[in-house]
Length: 134
Figure 1 (cartoon, rainbow, N blue to C red):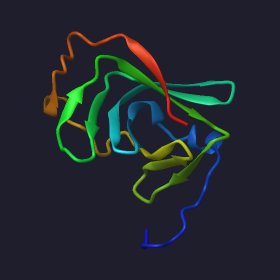
Figure 2: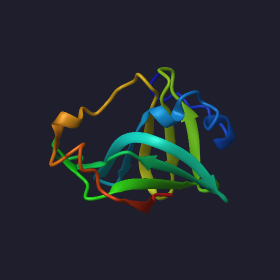
Figure 3: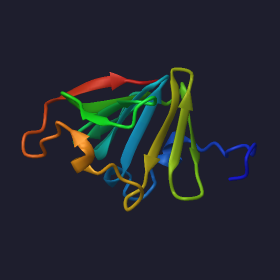
Figure 4: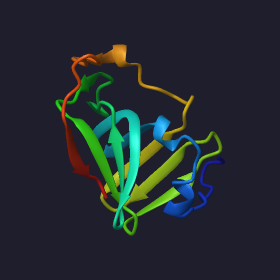
């Protein structure tokens, strides 16, 4: 996308129809805090979209290291308080008043290598918790 160009806004209903959305990966930035992980399931409850992660890594924009979260996070977006825009490369960009930006990478797209996540044990994954983002 050209710098300064406005992104097209799509409805959450359109975004949820993206093929293999539940096989992609999501990264959420709230101020300087980052969370990222592979999506295992997507569900809708009332006006909320829930992205259930297989595991979650956390970082800070000031550092490049990823650390395993003690919880497999469920990231929640309120459909009325967030907007979704498609990017040319298949990513979905989510913005809202309570988040800096969130990116959903499609199946086969960019991935965080689990080997690069300090403390992540794929054989002993944590129990999930919900984190309401926006």
